[in-house]
Amino acid sequence: MHHGLPRRLRLLAMTDWEEMTEAKTNPKPKSGWLNILVDYGPLLVFLGVYKFYQPPETSTFGEIAAVIYGTIAFMIAAVAALVFSKFKFGHVSPMLILSTALIVGFGGLTIWLQDEKFIQIKPTAIYLLFGVLLIGGWLRGKALLQILLEAAFEGLNREGWLKLSRNWGVFFFFMAGLNEVLRMQLSFESWLWAKLWVFMPLSFLFTFTQIPMLLKHGLALAEKDEVIKDEPPTA
Image (cartoon, rainbow, N blue to C red; front, top):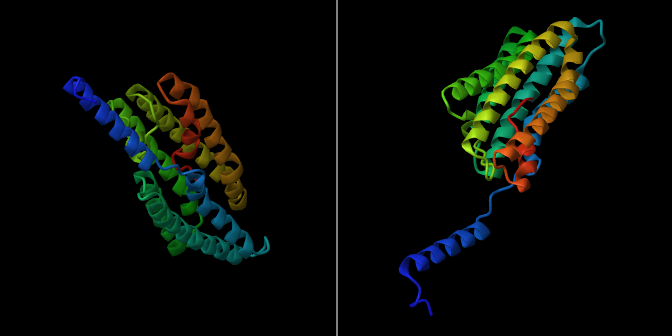
């Protein structure tokens, strides 16, 4: 039946059929909201453990103990989230590896020196590191956010990835400054709650503001939810 078709046309038809079959048998994995749980789950664990061990306001030693217990739980939860990501999604993004390493590093300093400020400085270090990487990559014409996230938003062109990397880099610098202001102005517990009720909503709001730009640069409409689910780790 195909003998009357030109050879090139037959090859194209076969290639299209193979791509369609592969897409059906190996669909793009969808993370759902599990990425957000991996990002913010350890923070919720920290809050829960800290509140459980929180002593009366007059007990300075008890406060430090609560911070240490919370930090230990935070470190364990962060490593568990990384392992879960590996087994659930088959890989771990470089951003998650970097943020987990900083959590363990600054958490270790908090426990060793019994000083809560190190766990408070940890977000600033993460934000500055990601900000420098993304802005540095953008200045060199490289969309490092795509590499760091290992994300693939269908249809998004190179210019869109470059703009997204630049915008997230600027946002990370803003978050680093905000964390330092809140760290110096608020009590430790108030700062913890700010992580949940200030930083998380700001991250979601910023992500939503990027969608029109991404759609302009080719992002498929079906991928809008994936932009929210694949946002960089900000907890």
